[in-house]
Amino acid sequence: MRSDKFLFLTKVQFDKSSWQNRNRIRVKEGWKYISVPVENKGKEGQLIADVRISNMTNWRNQHLNAIKFAYQKAPFYNIYFPFLKELYTKKWESLQELDIYITNFVLQELGNTAEILYDKDFDFQGEKNELLINICHELGEKEYMSNKGSENYVDIGKFNDNGIDHIYINYDGAEYSQVYPGFEGGLSVLDMLLNCGPEKTREIIMDDRNYTFSEWNKKIL
Image (cartoon, rainbow, N blue to C red; front, side, top):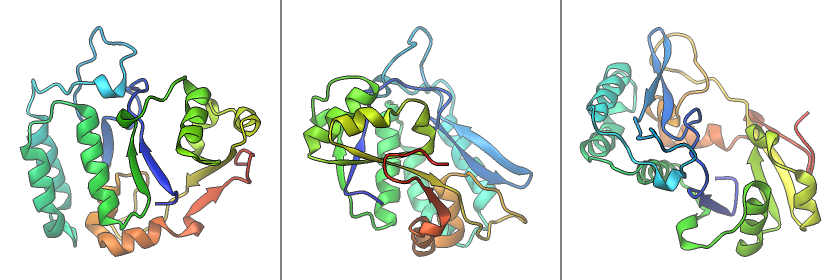
């Protein structure tokens, strides 16, 4: 949405404490997680591309029912329910396939114009900073944007030494009308789509006032 190219990076380590297999939805009491169960026993350090979904439980039906219960009175629920029903009807086996499918749908709804790329189509080498720098070089990019959460591992100096400018972005959020009284931030974009629709959601997401940007090649203060 804010870049020329958007790359799905799946040949990196899966982090079970991140957003790769879970997100948050609004409920009357505040918010709750919905998580996709994955096979991780004896698979520490596995790549996102290799993560298999555990279908030992009917998590798809649980998710759909939770979303129904939470959002059936939301203004745009009827518009998005067919997608949700189709999404949860399919028996997913691969986490990356599920994540990519959902993300591409959201990007399409919001009128994304960035070129969509997949790391499976390339042979990127390296780890952490080296990997990101090599990706930029191979794609012919001289600017890289990352979220504030990556400050722990991004080495701006290494980017600059390789001819790449770096900028941080952090979504601060904006309040909008939700299905329950009050406002809860930090939820899945699904919450905004169901409550606001695609046009208003895009307006909120593309409004610079809802973000903090670092200066080029500096951290967010």
